[in-house]
Amino acid sequence: MTDPDLGFEEFVAARWAPLYRTAYLLCGTSHEAEDLLQSALATTCVRWGAIRDKGAADAYVRRTMLNLAQRHWRRRRREVATEHLPDPGHDHLGARADHVALWTEVRRLPPRMRAVLVLRYFEDLSVSETAAALGCSEGTVKSQTHHAVDRLRAALPALELAEDHA
Amino acid sequence: MSTTEIRDALHAVADSTSVPLLDRTALQRRVARERRAVRAVRAVGGLGAAAAAVLLVSVVGVPFAGGGDGGGGTTTEQASPAPAEAASSQAAGVAAPLPYLRDGRLHVLNPQGVDHELGLDVEAVLGSTEEFVYVLDRVGDVRRFDAVHGDEGPGSPWTFEEVDSSTPQAVTSARLSGDGRFLGWIDGDGRLVVRDLLAGTTTSPVDLPDDSHLSDVAQGSGAALVSQDGDLVLHRDGGQVAVRTAADGYGQASTASRERVAVVDRDAVTRVYDVSSGAAELVGEVPGSGYLSPYGDRVASLVLRPGGAARALLWTPSGAVVELPVEGRPVDVAWSGETTVVVVSDLADGSVVQACDVGGRPSCRRLPVEGEDLTLAR
Image (tube, rainbow over all chains, first blue to last red):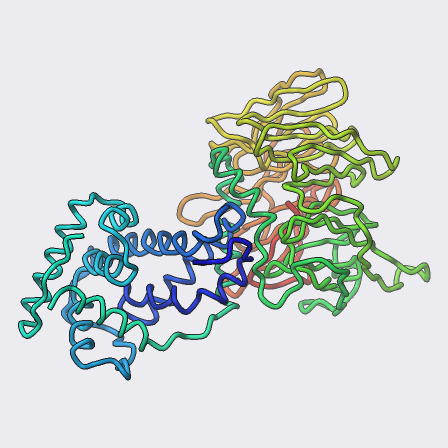
């Protein structure tokens, strides 16, 4: 939640870190995350005066990031797929081994599927909010969540993952 | 185990991710690029009224410009010889001070070829004369800098001092007429006001529809060209003149002189209308985004083509259109006096500014201004 009277510069200073974390989870690599967030913030800056409810600025940046990311993903889909996961970023010091293992598999998910997980389980959006953010139907969000959990369960049989149906 | 495990893993990874420091310079560069893109879209009338309103509001609401003075307070200048050439009036190649923005910051190149950094982050240069420069700052305040030139001859140093602009704060748009006599603005309550700087008089505020934009103020008459409700209207003594816009555009980048209006239409053509009779009659067309010279006799136009090609064109009083012989890929054009077109163009290693004399056969020469993000008046 952001202060409704916040200026853009203050907003960036206050929200850079949390927004970067969301960008990182969406992209899976640090350089792509920084690039995505910078682009989204530039767009937001130019339209800052039009964002009447500055408390919703986070959501505006997030939606812009998703729009930009989806455009990028569509372009990348035409490129040759690879099993290699570039730029692991760092080893997430302090995170539990099973969390890191799960994250490694999350990064292997198709970007849109990963975005569904990030919005639902990191940003705590509802199915309908996630659908709105991604510009798809609630049914698509549910099926993507289902497929994502299926894939993670198959990749990590030791984890007994089940879906929320909220 | 439920999806709580996924939730926990995502939060753990996010929390353990090292967050890089904000690269303000990179962000400023992207913001400048985004602004240029928005301006380019607006220049061909490609924005609807709602989006245009967004842009207008953003003009007064974009304080981001790390490290700069984006707000109030009188600014100080730093004068330095321009980097490219020796300081001389020939090297400068401009008859009057040339205001421009470098990375969003206000600079003025004086006729001696000395560059003055005026210490202010600016949204737009509204216009200038030999005596002063008006700009719109990042919070929507109109700011004025007076040029002071010593009387010890041509070599006397120039200085620029900020003075009170005597305008209300947080205007939504503003323009200075090409001759520098009339300053117009739309205030925060959506009212149009035009001040005659020579006579010291100010018109009574005129209520405008919501989200109106002041495109220009005409030289000679002080008539205000306003984009309002999707129409382009010239407000002048004795009534209004409706000016047609093509392809459902709004003509926000249009310019006006006493007798002419140049409408930058959405189909990437600038149409020139004669409005002296009280109705707008089409008298010429030029490709691209074109702007009237201060007295309305010529139009300088920038034509951007898909794939990156670009040309700077000149529409002459005879109706002929000629290409300006500029170096590099032109990205911005503006007028500096009635017979000088100033062009920013991109070269492989950055941008340069050229002054093109269009009083006769056009010829261009470089000015001692270089940089990566250069923006002229308009």
